Structures are given as structure tokens and as C-alpha cells.
Image (cartoon, rainbow, N blue to C red; front, side, top):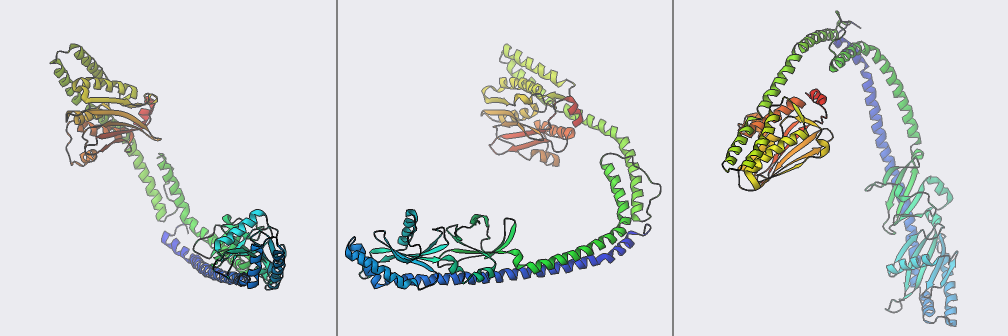
Length: 577
């Protein structure tokens, strides 16, 4: 195997294409199983929908009972007597007759627990179990629900601790057109008897059913499940959810008659028990086949990957700057990878020689280029300063001339210095001398503000990079017009760089000026040479991510941003270079 060519090794490895065939077969089984699961979801959902609809049909039948009671002539007459003749023998007699009448309706449905009527005096009349076991607040709530429907039926649940539903209907006088309220009809039913015909039926479904009304669980009465924890998908009638680390299929429907939401929670394992066993067996078989194929493939591929790994290790060492590598006179393998490794060693030998020969030359070239760029920053300012002194001398202001000459001397001293880097504090001092001179020239037309925090003054920057930019602002913001121009120098601290911003309120300049200079679309004149030189200087010293940025617009002023690394010592500066 060692001396075979790569294409021969790959040909042998293609035999293991059975792995791909097996994978596609497994994928097909998964897709088929997914479609089968989807079918089961929908069939189960449909079954529970029919189950929920059957429950609602029972509630409709009970509402028919309530309508019969409400419209019964005897019930109407008894309630009218109780309302119009309270605390009389006629009222007492009518109450007894009303109770007898309700007893005849009580046997209408096996699920009905009690039938009660609350008269206008809040007295209970009825037949069945637990007729009057409501608190005053529950009673007020039930009567309010019935009154809202104005004679229509409404279902409520979750009132008492026992699992019961209540059909409410306000009884109104129908013998005349007054429709005055005579009382409230309350039919209580056993929730479990409505849900399931027998206890065997509840076990048959093997599900947990919840009934939700107004975002709260009304059945069962003591439900440990919070409706807000279900996270059901809107738009579908089923979802796969997880409760207490158990997976369930949730089938849910909102039925129109009652407005309740029926939720059926079926344990996932009870539906897909056999399917899960089949999946586990199939996955186990595929895993065994895959392990066998991987073991065989590993033996064949090692003869290919081992020399590649050695070559990659050499490349990693070169990436870290180590060019002196272990050389081999003859490759271990005589295939294409072996020859590639040998040629790589030869290439590294030549590259190491070229780097050693040219490294010193490149350092000297950068140093010379830096000094050439630095030398281009100063003459233009010197010319403007001398012109300002000449202008001021004509006014015979000797004290002012003395100040200007002193400031100019300080500037010349910093200009002829051999320092390549100075602190921001020194640069601010030089800039103050420059502004001092220019303010004599332009007087109130030039406003200047320095806003660089004190804790940044100790950082080092290349010598004379802010002053040419301020000079650019004066040239285009003050000299070119008669309006007042405000120049602000401020700093912005970013995690990876320091930004010094020179803003002016002048007429603005082209924001793409530096790019056009690089492309040769415009020719630099005046301070344009200084801006380009500073931009080139910063990129040479620190890298392409640093330099100048121009933001400007017509009649909106100009903001020139200088991006620099944080350097707090001359050692750091030399390292950056």
C-alpha cells in the first residue's frame, strides 16, 4: 500500500461505498417513519376531536333541559309569586311546588348532579346534591355570568373544588313582554360522567384531559399542570411537548359552543412503543455496520493520511515562523504526497534564505520611507507661519509679534527634534503654539477647543500628525470664507484602538478624498499632501487597519479621524513598527 499512487488508494476506498448506500437506506427508513408518525399524530388528533365533540353534544342536550325549565309555565308562575309576594303563605306554597317541579326534571340525565333556581331574594330552590354550597363571591360570580347572557345559556367550571360544570341561564318572565328577571337557573353536572361513559373508557384512552377557560384549567379541579407551561403551537391541532421530563402528544381544540379549549395529553411512549423498539434495533444494526466499515476504512486511509499529517505539521511550524525543519533526503512514500513533501522541504530552504537576506533590507526601507514621509509634513506650515508674522508686523504690535515668535520657536524646536514618537501631551503643546499664532491672524473667526481626557496624555503617537489636520481645517474652514469656524480636537476610546477626531464647522470637503488620491483621480495640493502622507505613515507604522477617515458633507463641516493603537511606552512603539 505504501508505494501505490493516491488514485489507486482511493479506488480501493471506493469499495466502501456500501457505507453510503446503507446511509441512504437508513435515511429512507427515517423519512418513511416520519411520514408514519405524522399520520399517527393526525389520526390520534381526529379521534380526540370526535371525543371532545361528543362531550359538547352532551352539554348541548343539558342546555335544552335548561331551556325547557326556564320556559315551563309552572316554573314561571311559581317564581312570579315568590317575587311579588315575599314572606307570605302563597310564596311558601309556591316554593314547595317549585321544588317538586324540579324533581321531575332531575332524572332527565344521569350526569346531572343538581338543579337549582336562585330567586330574586337569593333563596335556593332545587333538587339534587349540594344545592347550596357556594360562597358569596362564587354566587355573585355565577349570577353575573348569567345576567350577561340576558336569558342565553353559559357554561362555567372551576368554581367548586369538586369536578363540576355549571349551566347558567337567567329566567325571565315570558307571559308578557316585560321580560323581567325572575331568577337564575343553575344546573350542576358531574364532569367525569360527561367526559367518560364509564371508568373503563377513561383507562382505554390512556390520556390526561384538560379543559381550559379564560387561560385557566377548569377540569380537572386539582390539576398539577399549568396551562402556561404547555407552549402549544398556534395554527395546528397537535404538538409534541415535554412536561416534567416526559414527552407527550398534545391534541387540542377550541369548541365553538362553550368556547372551551379541550387538551388531550397522551404519553409519547404509549403511542410509539413498537415504533421506538424498531428504531432502536435498526439504529443498533446501522451502528454495528458503521463501526465495521470505519475500522476497515481506517486501515486503508492511514497510508494516505499519515504523510499528509506530517506535511501539515511542517506547515504549522512554518506558520509560527519556524523555517528550520527536519529534512528528508528521500520521501517515506513514493507517491504524489511523498514528492510533495520533498518539494515543500526544498521550498522552505529557499524561503528561509530569502527571508534572512531581505529582512534587514525591508527594515531599512521602511525606516527611510518613514523619515521621507515625516519630512513632507513640515514646510507648508513654516510658510504660513512666516506669512502670518509678516502680516502682523505691519500692524506694529511688538508684544504680539514677540508671542508669535516665541510660539514659532517652540514649534521649530519640536520640528527639528529627532524624536519619532512623542506623547499626546507634547503634541497638544505643539498644537497650542500653532493655534496661538493662527488666532492672531484670524481673531474671532477662529474658535478652538481641545477635549482629550487627561488620562490619555501619556500615550505615544507619531510626531506631528494632529497639527497638519488642524491646518487643513483652518485652510478650508477659515481662509475660504468670512464666517466663524469652530475647530474641536477630541478623543474616542475603543477596545482595540484610540481615535483622535478633528472636527470643524467649515464648508466641508469630499469624504472620498483620500481614496481618490490613491486612485489618481485627483492631484494633491496644499494640505492634501499632508493628509495623504499622514495616512501612509500610519499604515506603514501600524498596519492597514489604522490611518485616516474623512466624514464630511456639503455645508456640514468636516470630521477627520486618526486611528492609532494604544502605545504607552517607546518600547511599544518600536514593537509596532
